[in-house]
Length: 341
Image (cartoon, rainbow, N blue to C red; front, side, top):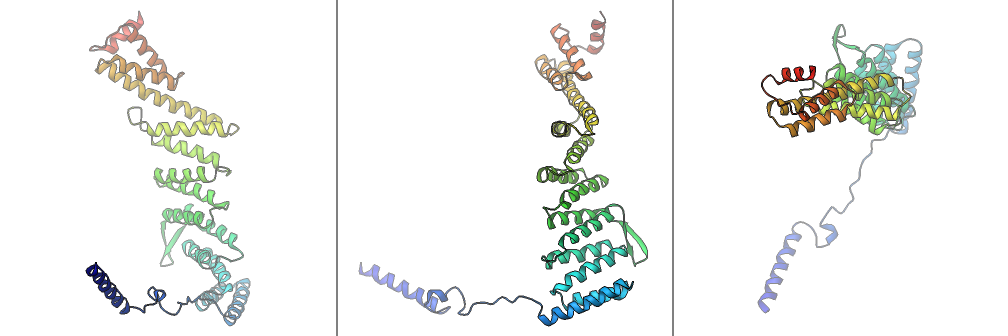
């Protein structure tokens, strides 16, 4: 017992000594300095605010008089000298419009994004988002930058998608968000990127179901999946997705002007899916002599699209099996002869 007590006491002294080398024995001093760390905030002084406001007024006067170049130089000075002043947000906004007037859409967008990031209380925030949307739309419609300010550059569809995505993040509850998502889908289709189009449309459908663009989103989603279908002999995952969105469209938007087209497309997709089942039934019937499996797929074809041509062929195969027509070499010819009788 005495040995245990001595051992514990020695261990306590060792720990106390180690702590003394790093801090005092006051537990509150073990985890930080005596003085509280101060955080400095970069806030413009009253003098800076006054100077920036005066410079902004001068820049506006120059701009109103048609001096875009001199106005732009003043706005740049405001941004450089007084980055946190309230007037700087307006200077960036006006400079962005000057850049856009020169066709420098990406640079204009960047100026506007700086307002969003550094001046979130800017009174014209909604206008900033609207002008950002204008920049992204210009790129979407094929506007090109300039190489060395003279040579037309490449089309910037990828940049347009990035800007639309930024708009969704900047203002997810605004009317611009669903519009931006729809434009992302359109550009992605133009760029032959169906996965990105599907992702944008899926977000539009799930996050903005009351949007005026919801019917177009369902329709475009169905069309995008339909375009991925390669034929009845391939995997039918995209076909099923197209059918699902066409059916949802008919339920949700029964008065849409697209109604006739959607019904026609739905029938085509259902026929294609039924034909894929028919092909599988033929495989088991003609090449594996497995009537049980064949009947399963033939009945699926009839269930999927009972009024389709594929269903009619499936019913004939079912009749053949029930009549005892065994698949042999040249079975398709034999069935034709028996049917003719």
